[in-house]
Length: 454
Image (cartoon, rainbow, N blue to C red; front, side, top):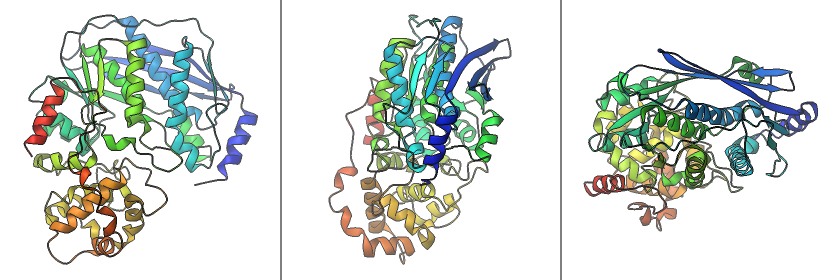
């Protein structure tokens, strides 16, 4: 936590008065759809982030151009938070389109909760009432889609980790699936290929960050986590509209609901059930009543997902969940996300096979003990990563100790000697099926069938 950034935050808000979402542009030609946003801060800083969609493959339908404009406008409302956080002016003015009071309430809640980690790690004292004044200075209204979506296709976002591989594998034989990727990397492309999909049938979005934001970050302006999964939510609705698909099946689990710290900040807020419910209501009210957005894996915890993934051996050499090693398509073996994933697979996959996936035995690395303490609840806070609950980690370690063959490596020995007693009440983790979900038939039946086959 950098408490000195509270002074920066206060200073910026004195020296900068407003962030403006000026307008956006759409170039729609036979090759691609290219979108650019225009943001400014007091005319002293200007940002022009963009994204593009290549019109390849045959998954495209005749789409409503007015509805496309609505979705592009909405995506800009998520995109702007990455730029606002560098300077944090109190006023955010929307000139690109009109927002009613309910929309403003939705966006303020998303911004505040989605920036919970940013505020916490920067030592910023912010509260909902005064962190931002958000209002619209436009009378331009956008069209909600009332077109009935008859195509039963399913948009499945692929990030390259184990969760989206499970969703893709379980749905591909039962449903008509379109894999969806933002900024493709090797792990996500390999996942799609291993699942048997032609790359031309994948819906890809290339998102570009304005270099000026990176320049400001390097100069010491404020930086931190933003709710990327919320951006993904709106982009998947765009993909559904363009391909005339009815369903969007995310791979967010029940574990994402647990706060990262006791104050309530949650690294995974925009993956939580609370956000899913808010977004579904927003989608029905302002976007489309006919597109169904939900998480296919919401009833499961990370332990249950790891059990399913352990049987999908063809993906074991390709998946990657490490943020540190993402650009090199590798496991760094030194971060809490690597250790968490290693722990979750260890109850189900033989020691040597897990070691081969990660390139070494992470349980043998004593330098990871502080991360183990964070993951198991000994430390005051969990890692700010997409990891499971404290109960799930402890249960997985308990199960690993029961089946481990050979002398215990350093971390398991440390756990057995110091922490093993805390798992005695955790049997409920093994077969947990959370009823807070939005799965409709046949998705629920497909998931239950897969669990019964274990």
